[in-house]
Image (cartoon, rainbow over all chains, first blue to last red; front, side, top):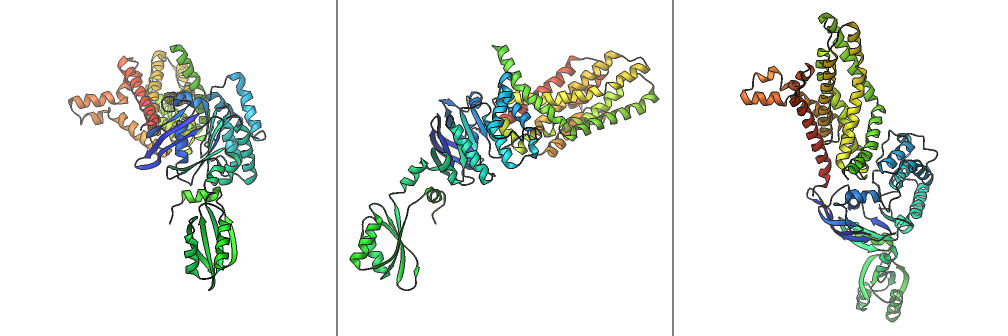
Amino acid sequence: MISIQNLTKKYSEIKALDKVSFEIRNGEVLGFLGPNGAGKSTAMKIITGFLAPTEGTVKVNDLDVVDNSFLIRKKVGYLPETNPLYTDMKVYEYLNFVAQARQIPKSERKKATKRMIDICGLSDMAEKIIDQLSKGYRQRVGLAQAMIHDPDILVMDEPTSGLDPNQIVEIRDLIKKIGEKKTIILSTHILPEVTATCSRVVIINNGKIVAQGTSDELTAGAKGKEIIYIKIRGDKGIIRQRLNEYYQVKNVKEYTGEGKDIHAFAVEVAEGNGRELVYKACVSNNWILLEMYRKQENLEDVFRRLTTKEE
Amino acid sequence: MNLKLVKESISNIYPIFKREFISFFNSPIAYIFVAVFLIATNWLFFSGFFLIGQANMRSWFGLVSWLFLFLAPAITMRSWADEKKSGTIEFLLTLPIRDFEVVLAKFLSCLAFLIIVLTFSLTIPITIGSLGDIDTGIVIAGYVGVILMGAMYLSLGLFISSLTRNQVVAFLISLAVLFSLFIIGSNNVLVFLQGPFASLASFLSTTTHFNSIIKGIFDSRDIIYYLSFTALFLYLNSQIIGSRNWR
């Protein structure tokens, strides 16, 4: 289990992370979500022991990552955001070097290298110099590098960035396959990726956690709030006033209607059935309802609402 | 217990050492520098050798001490700077390998490369030996001196490379610092200094120590000078690498 407590990281005076706390259970695939510059990479650099936090602690199985960096690094595989590779080496040479640096015994090194080449679909590229590989293949080499020592914990900073749609699906499947046995933290700003691969999500913005839970929980948290979009023929002032009288209605926002008499509103209903409520209001007031549809928040809306400043 | 730790360190250092060492030969810069070094020293040495007509290598070692000012920074300039620029440092320092082990691995690979370059120069003592009577002891002393001096230059170059992400900057600053250390012991500088400053400058300068070694005088102070400065720069280097963990 990885437990992160009050994690703060300052770069000179700028706070990249501000009192972030969360936990990652064993066997979980945690999606770390946030806009660019939210602090995702910084958090990952701290978890992998590349940087030390300014304040707060990260503990892996109750061991502090700063004090026990050496031990923990053995258990962690890390794919940094920039996917740095020694580009003057051949693919198998590089993987063999990583295996050796990871202290895989000589007798198993070849096997481990071969296994990663197979899993990551690199068999045609094994003899090539990394410099000559396309971005997608380089990303696979990066993944192979991170997994070659069969780590318990896998930290991947935007593993699918720069890949084409087919490759993204392949890498996702790969992550899912590995994720059955390992604890994985992956960062991304691509939302469908989270729904596709992660069992839990932490959304971070400006160095702070703004939401966490399963992707269902996050969208369900907003489910109580329905927004009903309606278009009604009638008197604008009265419609607004009457709608506001219902205690379930939290907010009535007007938006561009059609011409003189037809007015458009977005009605935010906090509880109960919003559509029925609107219908009954129309009937009892003799308004003519021209259009009505309901919108529930999906993960994308949640993300956008949480990570953009209101007005 | 201690032996086990040493063994572990060696098995941590070896793969990095090997990779670094091989990567010298993956880049054309290495070949260019070796060629320039060997051609320059051979040419300059032999053009004076037959005029003087003495069967010794003292002037060659003198030349080497000059050329090392360029050769050592050229070997070390990319070592850390490149690693920082390409981001591979993030990979390297999240491996289960201690900072000082990475520093040592890089230092040893540079030193090994330097020794390989020096091996190619062995044609000179062999040639001289076939022409006249050469004092083998002094030649060996000279080579030991060159390697000690080289080790210090490389450790300084590595330290400076760890301060920047630009190879050219690393090269130029290393060159400037080495050059300063080189000239402060020369008579041209010493005449301007007085009493304790003069002796301090001549103690700090690499020239003073090197000159006594190539004369064949093995003074423990000279050896300690090179070894302790090498150790100092390696220590500073691992402190800089560790500084990412300062809170």
